[in-house]
Image 1 (tube, rainbow, N blue to C red):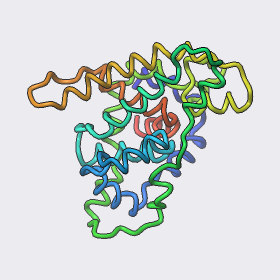
Image 2: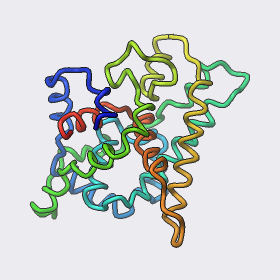
Image 3: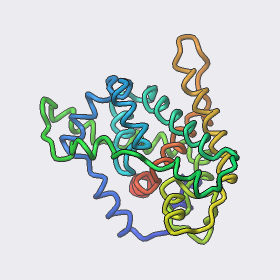
Image 4: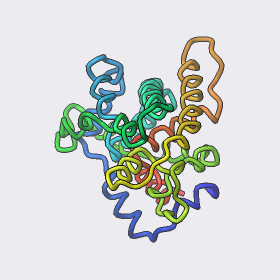
Length: 247
């Protein structure tokens, strides 16, 4: 966890508030338990997720946490989704005759977060047993997964999400903070993002191929790319808060 310690410059109160906001509702667990069985792969759902550039910051990490709680490390659905999103981002930052401010529009979501739109946080437990609800709320497997890979994804953390803004530059910003900078008409150099995004795309492609029968196991760099891709697409604060409270 030493490699991730640099991500926690704030006091406990900040992360306590973040962690409280991450509390997973019965409705979210009940929905996601069914969702992770394959719904993420249906064309209609995939289209909504691509338009929304994934989930909102909160639901992105809740989704991965529930995936980890029930499916261990079989992250085929998330890997396919975030590879597609990173590839979409790679295309957006390619050199073109347009200025960065015009190209960054391609990084904007054109639809809402799927889970927010469905308002699943207010739904009931449905047919989920108490044992399933308890297991779905357990984020320790996600924390262990992220902690073991921390030296590989820490360099890609958005310093604005982490609260170390004095170190911020274009390379260290996630997509939401890049969009916020564009809205405030701050200078943006997307060329600094290009190499990092291409690297993530290559690792995610290798990770995706590892799920084919007989394929080689993914490397730690490939697994860490999933963490980095989610952080870049959606924001890092929920993961940072979880790791702060689960050292």
